[in-house]
View 1: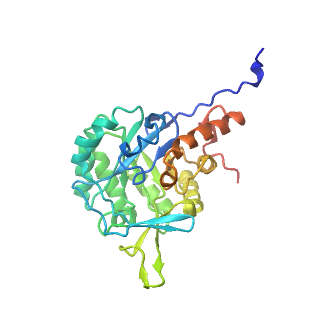
View 2: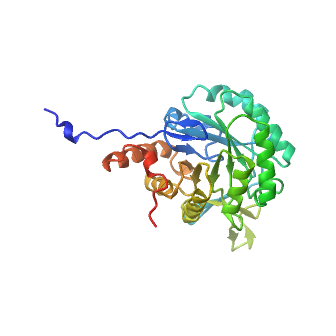
Amino acid sequence: MQDSGNKRKETHLAVDIAGIQFKNPVLTASGTFGYGLEYTDFIDLNRLGGLIVKGLSICPSQGNSPPRVIETASGMLNAIGLQNIGVEAFLKEKLPYLKNFDTNIIANFFGETQDQYIRVAEKLNSASEIAGLEMNISCPNVEKGGLSFGGDPKKTEALVHVVKKNISLPLIVKLSPNVSDIVVMAKAAENGGADALSLINTLVGMAIDIKSQRPLLANITGGLSGPAIKPVALRMVWQVAQAVDIPVIGIGGIMNAQDALEFFIAGARAIQIGTANFIDPAISVKIIEDIKDYCEKNGISDVNSLIGTLKI
């Protein structure tokens, strides 16, 4: 006879962020998962809480010149420069296939000007298959846009406000760590009407070839990601989660379930897997399973009960 007393109760993994119902709190980060379709040979996209597509602009972009990616101690530097096929091509060539998967499609987008941000957002907003938008105001690898908005709280609030006014989908604003006070920027985005925040994007860094005495990246500097930035990301997520009333999505060096759980405890309602996708294309599903296993072993019936439980 089976001992029912030893049977573990299945954990509730679903989370709600700005009205979007995610089956679990594990998403794939923009820029590290292509348009999602590239990973179908390695992972069942239906298992994901959601996937965030490569950043989209109003026109196609070739990005920066190579070399664009350099491995570093406990991480990597990238200076891709937001290469993408453009919003129109995405809607025509990628989205019709993505809609066949049972997961939330979040479209990341950016612009060089306020008008471009609005135009891309409006086009994406018209697609019924998209669950929400993630606005990138935080890329350190392009000369225009990006940090010219994301580094100034007044510009951030104004941009979020005008974009939000022109769309009906939930708007997630992706914040940069390359600012003097992340909380100020988070509050500015919230004041502008953001429905949720995602943080952090990459830290600005560089690497040098000592033989040639030249930068290893053609762009000279790039965005540092991976385990090296996790302590910074965790601190910033904790600070922001205490300061705003909208949901926070944690990003930065999450390589396993323990990392993800730390972000939940710090206040993140969901997390995004980035650099780890390059090491193990199936890592997101493994992390989902390991989060579930941890909760069941520890008698946690709902992953939401972990959010913001840090004891000081």
